[in-house]
Length: 279
Image 1 (cartoon, rainbow, N blue to C red):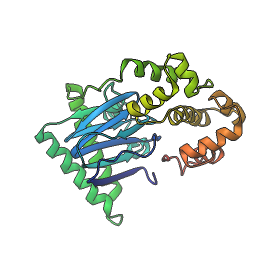
Image 2 (tube, helix red, strand yellow; image 1 turned 180 degrees about the horizontal axis):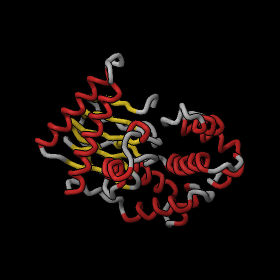
Image 3 (cartoon, rainbow, N blue to C red; image 1 turned 90 degrees about the vertical axis):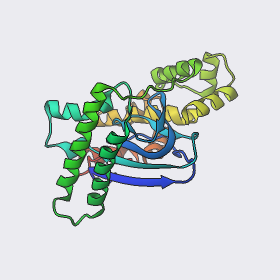
Image 4 (cartoon, rainbow, N blue to C red; image 1 turned 90 degrees about the horizontal axis):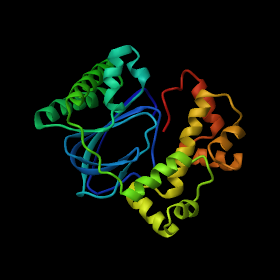
C-alpha cells in the first residue's frame, strides 16, 4: 500500500483465488458487485454473495478460496487510521466497529446495494484523478459516509453466519493458534490428532486454502511484526520467541512473508513518513 487510501476495482471471468496467505496493518473493505466467493478470514470460512461486504481488520489473516460460480466483480478499499485522523473517540469507534465485530461479513438489500455502489463509484472517479483539487478530502468524506452507513446497519443485523470449519479442523486450527511458537511440524501435529501427515496436509489446504507451513509462518511473522513495533528486543530474541531455531531462518521467512527483511521493517515503522502500512 503506497498511500493512506486506495480503491481498486476488478472483474474476473475465471474462478481464481489468492495465490498466498495475506494480512496487512491497514483496514480493508471488500465489496462484491456480482458472482460469489468463499473467503477464509481469521479461522472462519464465509460464503460471499452479490451485494455483500467483507470487513478485514488490521492483521487479520485472510484468503479467497476456490469454489462457487465462475467469475466475480468486486471493489476493494484500503485505508489506514491516519486517513481518518480528523476523527477520534466515539465517532472513530463507531466507524470501525464492523471490523471488530464477531462476524466480518454483511449482506444488503437492493436499495442498500445501490447506495453503497454509488459511493464506491464516486470514490473510484475521485481516486483516478490525482490532480483534482481536494481529492483526498473528498475521498475521506465518501469513506466516512460509507463507514457510518455500514456501521449503523451492522448494529441492526445483516451479518452473515460463517460456515464453521469441521470439528477436527477447528481443533487443529485452535491448537496451531495456541502453540505456533513451539516447534510445530506437519508430523507433530498429525501425531497429536491421530491422523496421517498426508491426510492433515490435504485437509488443511482444502479447509483453509493454506498449506500447513504457510499458516504457521504467517502466525509467527505476524507476531514478530508486533514485537518489532512494540518492543526493543534483539532480533535473535524475537526469532526465538516466535518459534524459529535460527535467526537466519527467521530472516529468510520474514522476507518471504512480508517482502522485506526484519531490519528494513523495523526502520520503516520508526519513520513517521512510512507508517501507512505494507503489504
